[in-house]
Length: 171
Image 1 (tube, rainbow, N blue to C red):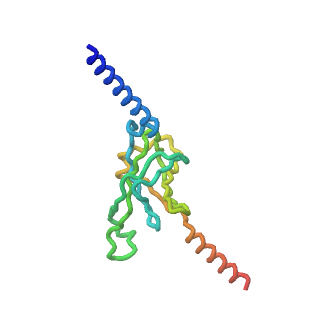
Image 2: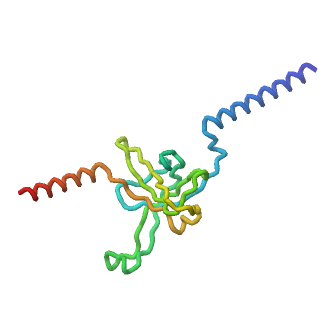
């Protein structure tokens, strides 16, 4: 009789400890296992910065997702937009972004990628002003455009150009 009681008590203690650990893990990770995610497609404009898998995505300054996948996609160029006669396709860097479903992205939403002085890349979502929201599936046809934020090299180059122009005005 005592052995059976000890087995039951051991089972209860182990089950309680498992539930406590599961609860602590839930609060420590912010309930990430139970969140609902939406996957949006984004098209990164050509430039020196490209997002990497795992880079954070911030929405209004709050981390709201991560870069899930980065890949290339080629699109045909209409003949009237081609810069060269033999140019038929343009290749873009595409991003599959995992964003918490709490955030509803309005139409007109854009992205901006920047790099900090430490090399950390951040993809910021700039919300549009429309009351209508984007459907995650609709971004497969019309991806969210992501522009490049000016980096320090381009800013320094621009200052040099302004300085040269100012000197030519003075002389």
